[in-house]
Length: 72
View 1: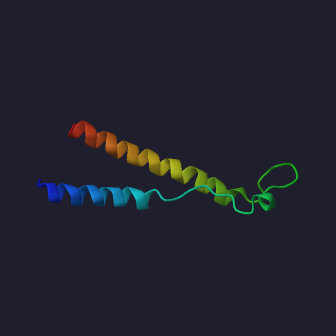
View 2: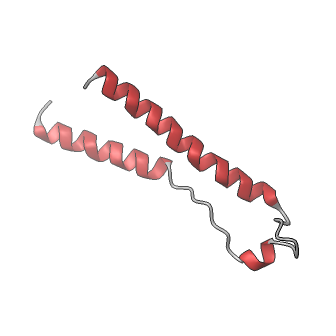
View 3: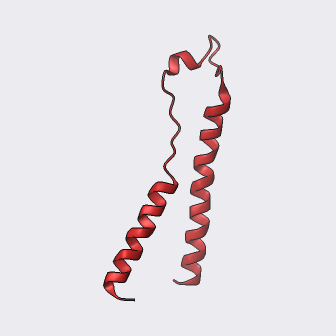
């Protein structure tokens, strides 16, 4: 693989990772999202975001680990 091909491949992987794992867990209007006891009024969307991001990171970690093992 030439240097130019390697640069293109590296840029493609960076772009894929950056746009695949782009979610974050945000709490806009956080004072309105919790009740007087400190519980989320609508936990569904926040819990979904809180679990999908680590799942995506775990997937990428597995893929990269396998690739490093196959081609150290």
